[in-house]
Length: 468
Image (cartoon, rainbow, N blue to C red; front, side):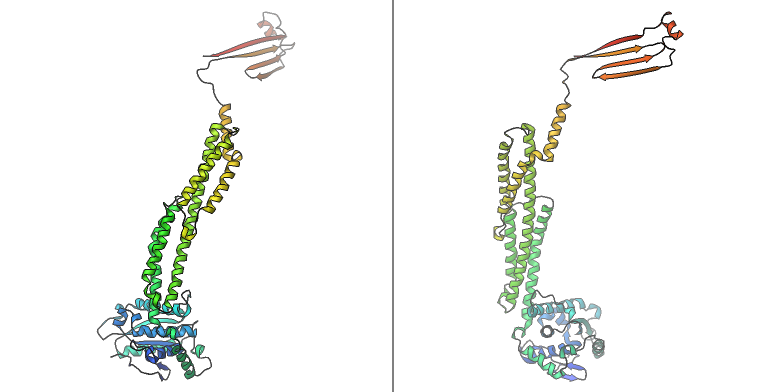
């Protein structure tokens, strides 16, 4: 038998409250587990006994202990007994010589209990509520193989209750225990929505799992699309593929949660979760649509400006036909944009090309009208001028160039103590004039055969350059 003797009614044994857990055969009164739930709501430490290794291996949610925990969580959530967590000890019984504490998967048991809590919280408070089990209970798992282990567990619970920062008075207030217990018990008894929360909790958890599974299925495809868009590339037939992906994702969720649709409360929460999935998918696809429209717009404007530069090279900016000819190029660019944008449309999400086409039309017109003053057009014009100015003659063209250089020397009276030169350049022609007062210098007179040098001497030089 169990190391924790079963009880059939609520017993007050000093500071210890004993109450029967839930039964899978009945769903009324104490058999629902509301006696244990009411006692656990008032207690500062709770011990869940009678749990076997078979119970935890198969999952607590489908056992009477799962139903007891569900009633307890429903009670504390309705009583708003939060702020400082109580201790919840799950005593797992095993015959001597059986499993050791090292083989007991405490983390898996705690996760199982958290799942039960999340399902009940979604039912009691709504699926969007963010209450966590840690705000109500600190869950601990103990392996019980003998009566000595039972004593240790009870001592552990007593110590936890003694050191708890929250007293049961947070729920009882100034009321005596019997009154507070009766009120909680009465509230739980008259709550038909939570009479058997375990199946509903399981259904809601199944909906959450289906949400994760459905979005996970689409995540790989969405990731590849985002990667392609990040490189400035468009997704082939994005609109059709996106609409198909959205429909497949929702169909997968509907198929996996069909059983929850027929349960009270769970059906409503299923619709909430489905709407959340749909909104998340739609937002992701909307963002991808906007990014790709931006990429397509940039490509269209870049290609249009490039075509204007090519036209400018052929016709020049002063051509009367420039704007008229490029009006045709504008219509061609706009048609190409509309054709590509049509493949991005997702009509089921009201994502159409109409707004984008209107914006691109205005930008193309503005690009055409402002093109002559654009930096690209000005740089192109400057390059053409430089090419014209620096254009060299062809080797086959002959030429004859003439240049005249005039050198003049003035030699007034003196002995050579003054000397200077001046020059002037005019194209290929030049004039150089020098002055040196050495007419009376004996050496100079000797150079000229005993006579004074001439006062001024002019020496013209004609240069002829012929290229054939």
